[in-house]
Image (cartoon, rainbow, N blue to C red):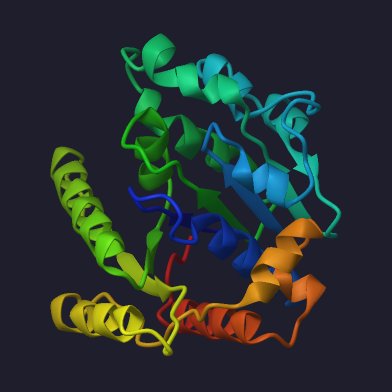
Length: 260
């Protein structure tokens, strides 16, 4: 089972779109995929047509039961989506209280890792969507994965957010005596603007060794797909955005990212 976390400390850079679209492409390839929403805003669930107010359980319930995790308890919180072989471990607003209620408890940074260890035979891939805030939830998302995918909107302010994200990974890696492996993915690229090519050039100059050398283009089909509560791969499979994510997936797998 491969576990990839999609993270950035800046919002609006395409994290959820990246999770859903990669998951959709993987399912089309015959893979069993679980997507996990660690963001209290529950954007991933809403994208896939799952109302967090109507789910019987959520990731928060598993954090509350962190010392009593069982396979049955975990699978009870996972919900199927409208896409066959694509499941969701949903978020609810209750996740916003995790830092305050549970942040002081020993071992809370590894809850998600323990959850995945119990279900690793059930899925081929797990994709984790992160909140844009450093806290217990992001710590869990980073600690449980083999590889981190960092979507970065190709504009000036997003580059500043990337710098914070890389510094966070370095600091966390030191505290955990590990070195995170990551790929930076330029998103929302619009060659018609001055800002996108300029931002891409800066990424190429400063992050050459960790930057995917292609881009995810601006594509209105992503917005249309979210309105239909479907991955773009299942809404309009021949769009340029889906093609770009398919190329990204090929790249990640060719690098043997996350052999778990």
